[in-house]
Length: 65
Image (cartoon, rainbow, N blue to C red):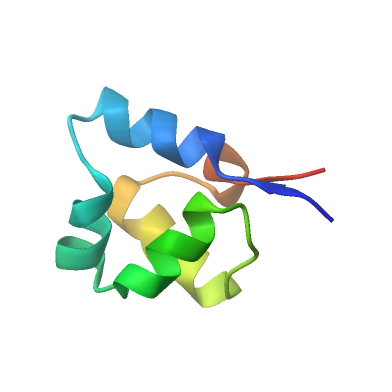
């Protein structure tokens, strides 16, 4: 299973945010953000927290291929 977070990275760019904002504002660990950068699956609660922060739906930020 291949996970793509390209929607998340694009949404961050569009909003003038960086991965560090996920650490600082959402409370994610740097390890979690690193896993996402490598296309690894993360807990669905993390996706929910990111979606709440960005006011989006999971399908906007993650794609499973």
